[in-house]
Length: 211
View: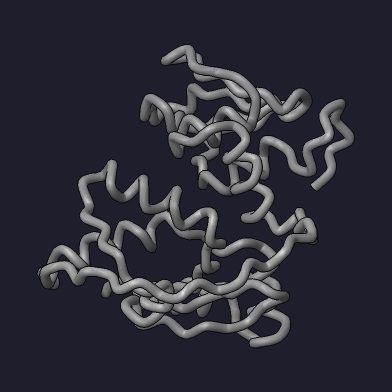
């Protein structure tokens, strides 16, 4: 969304708040008060200035621009935050031209020991909790698939993350204590027993609430 601000970013702080699923406690002209995802305070002490796209938690004192909010929550740089936000909101539209390198001969990857079902369940459940369904995919599911919001929630549709975001998600899983092993990218879908549905060049996938 373009908010007509001085900056050139194609989104506003409320878009970032939506991606972070911040709990809104109260609204006022030009500002919103939400729970702080930085310090964990649940009393609506974080102020989102929608006129300037700035934020500040009146409890822990953290604050800054909307990129730094996303970056602090996910432990990434501001530049990575920008790319991830743009992709999640599907506002970047086109990618720059690039040259496809010649495919090298595949190298044999050493297989890891089998992981317990409980550990796989914990890791995949945490991964699915990090994924969201972007508005463009929700609209597609509603207008093309004919699904209602209740059905979308019940089936657990999520937007498949782009390749560059997979590394960030993996780092977050590792920091949370999960063991992430090397396996084919297609196993993202197979392991989670998902169904892929092509949507404007991206994917919206249905995952069960428990795996």
